[in-house]
Image (cartoon, rainbow, N blue to C red; front, side):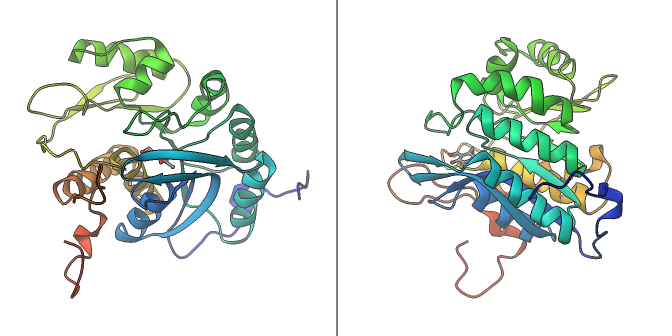
Length: 284
Ligand code: PXL
């Protein structure tokens, strides 16, 4: 359904309702991926939409199957919602393959999807790969230059830059290296570092801002990275500037981690309910 005469994003519907689009994979266990993003969008007050890249077969014990969608099907989902409903902000999560990455990058450019938060998802919390190894180069080349914000954890930093982050100085070096790959803003997440504070580092090419928060000693943090990126995306869709949006995203995910809960026999999810939890029979 491509049409070379498509109008620019400014000519598409400017929605009265704040809208956000997630371009990501489905988690059948409901804790991460598309499911985490849509719950986050709801809790953060925006109308959530999805372009599914892959369906994972997954529960609290891990990922046992991945079914990728055809790249053109991913692009068509993006085009469909952009050209009718309008997209106030978008985020990417699991992109699975180089072919899907190229299709997403092409659609983002052609349709003027903006602002774009890129969570460079490479693996699940159990270590199950969610990105083909040959797709890393495509992520670097085709998606990072389109990102208004990229939100890697320390494992993703190593894959993208080769930098092994162990200290705050390493985080700064990594932020500089990532910024040189094209994104306007970089948020290096320090949650995997040891220490009592889970400090993240925000960098816009000129100044560093450290975003400390209390570390919660729970193993049930499945979907926390997706949730941070989605909450930041929702805040951008509601018109906040990047710095305020990242603070808002961090506030939402920190409370969601504090409200995480065990589920199944493995790793439970973060609690997305905390802004809507005073309902009879709610989970927490
Ligand atoms: O949390 C990263 C992530 C993203 N997307 C999907 C996932 C996961 C982690 O398991 O399953 C679909």
